[in-house]
Image (spheres, rainbow, N blue to C red):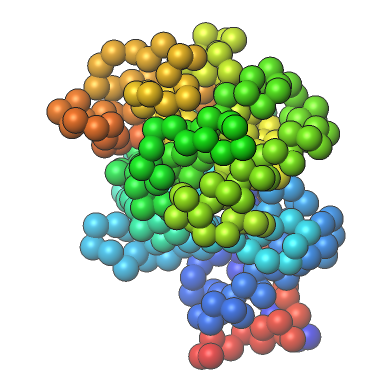
Length: 366
């Protein structure tokens, strides 16, 4: 054949969708694997017309899954963001939405059996070295997709997937507060830089000259705002231990305003150059954590519930995202032991994706 056939599945995970592969079905050489993934998704073409990507950051994603190299985990999961229109990938961030489909993919692909009516799988997130526990329904040994759980940003209802993130502080930056400060100032704008699973720069929307309630389309057309955000990103990235972040997927830039729908806070998030139609899973976890952090930029905008287990609702352009944070109240500093979120997933397709033999001939012994 003039092309190499590679087994894949496409799943919607949370409010994203992506291609899922086994590690064993892809090249062992990282450079060749990158070329294969770019070809599969659609290369540098912003339309991704010659691949299976959706020409949007939320649908230009890949999950690679295999047996775990760690004794305390069942699976290894590497998240790959294919950067739309740039012909490159980014493995710096995690993605909690694509993670939500990992358990279903593992069972559907034969990597793991379903255990009981409810299967629990511990996933090692290779990007960060952290762990997440997935719990989902598997009656009769098969993944259940239909259910009554609704998540904002996704039409209809599906079966629940509980994602419990275990000690994810500093996943990419090395610490919960990578700059060492509750508040930093760049270009006259106060911000809280935080990494509780996702590096996020949290700023008050009013300080940037917006209300924080605009639509994503309005914000995407605001050239002055985007220029301000880019200037801040380039300056704060090295201080967050992320190095040169020009073109990188992190940090996410989140502008906050008082909640309007009874939640904790209202958000508008750039990921990083386009405003998210909702908010990412780990982005929501990090923003919620910033909101309960003493002396953060959010402190005067929120009313934080008491207790070690905090049920928090993060509002976003298409609804809200529920986050449960379990706090170690004995710690003198903010310490989040567990972050729980509710997601759903659905298998969309399975088969083979084809790449030219000039990209990869299928030979793995490189």
